[in-house]
Image (cartoon, rainbow, N blue to C red; front, side):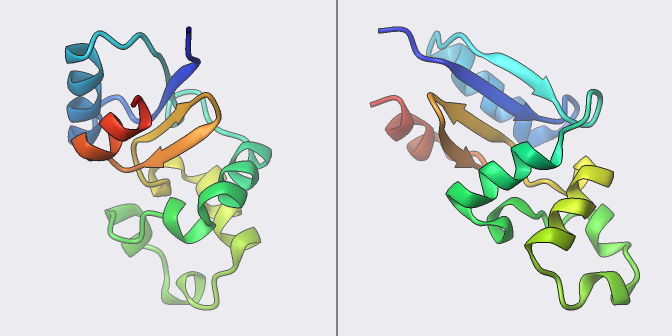
Length: 117
């Protein structure tokens, strides 16, 4: 059975490199979507948020989010978080692995293995 596999993220990210190395090592074919280079739309982020929660998608530990003025960080809700992620895709936690519509956010060899079990 052929699966649809897409890895979403930023090409130069170290965690992305780990995810690509794991997928390549398992012989898993995947499409790569660099959302920093080609962007991402709000509809996609809303669909992801419906599956995993916007809090999971928002990378609060990255320098892009931490450099925001405090006023923009406070009182975040889904709509504001998605607008921030569309405007600055570096704020999306990475990688986002889409396996036939099921999402794995962040990289973990165990979680990746489970996604393909």
